[in-house]
Image (cartoon, rainbow, N blue to C red; front, side, top):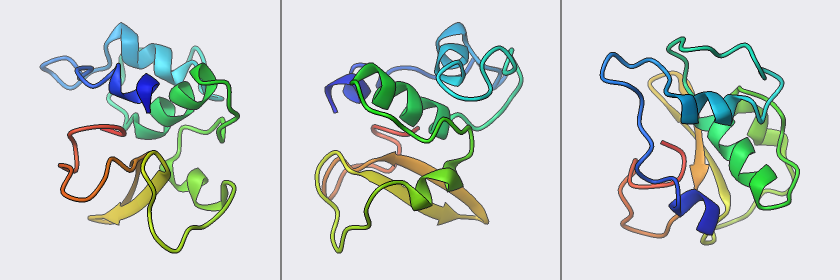
Length: 109
């Protein structure tokens, strides 16, 4: 969580293209060198970057759905666990920050 929290202010450019920091996140996946400044969802790239920076192995995928089969399923969320949601027909991955935490306040923007 320390790694994720340290990145909390990262955002896309005003035109929704990727910043150099977001491109760095993509470089922690199989998409290394391919993201450029394209407008892509970057939540899975972020999750993989955090995991790698913290010394863990993620999914190596730029797809949020890839986290659905990663490690174990919990019966209730715990602080810092990987969380996958489905919203408006699209998967999103992030890190659980606790009850009442804003959806985009951390950890999987």
